[in-house]
Length: 255
Image (cartoon, rainbow, N blue to C red):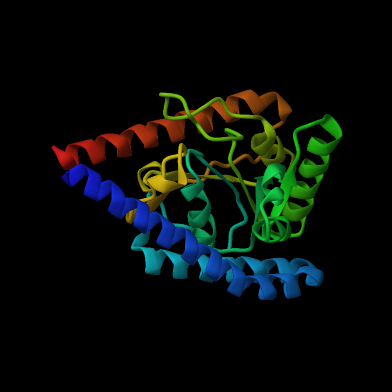
């Protein structure tokens, strides 16, 4: 009986959280649409609006944004941010954590969601993997953002990790751009997202911390395309070790 009651309460909580998300989205929508025509400054403003949206929603649904800095973060440094991807709750920490202008690489399929899709299109650099030309267009847009002094954010796994491993295999894109633009990589770990919202259902949402771990930056000065595979594996190994470390800390804290 207790399990049934808890499940019912979680369902009610999830409905409440989804409705709040939609209401705040509708309030943010006019500001985002007004900013769209204003180029880089408009894009930066849109991310500020999205941060307010995320922080407000967090507050009202009992989710806490937390940050762990394993090394000091240089807010003035331009980075290519990469992170593990396992839940839709990976998205709010991106805007909550942003300390400098940033653009996110996002899946094209999300533009089909009513209203949210318009905001999504205005906010992210879309990647459409249906053919090589569309993919190359996304890469050009990311490199253009870097040349304009804007940091970019990429999930190198490409999509949700539904395996038993800490990470899926990485795509080359983030590391290729890092080498071509000589921009350091800043790995992030989203260690609570799967516990806040499992990828299998929107009705798995729970309150609690949603923590971002900032790992040490990885310099790429002097690297060439011959170093791409080595760089990708280096970042993979560092992120995998970090995820295992924080997973063990979580388990030990419960024992």
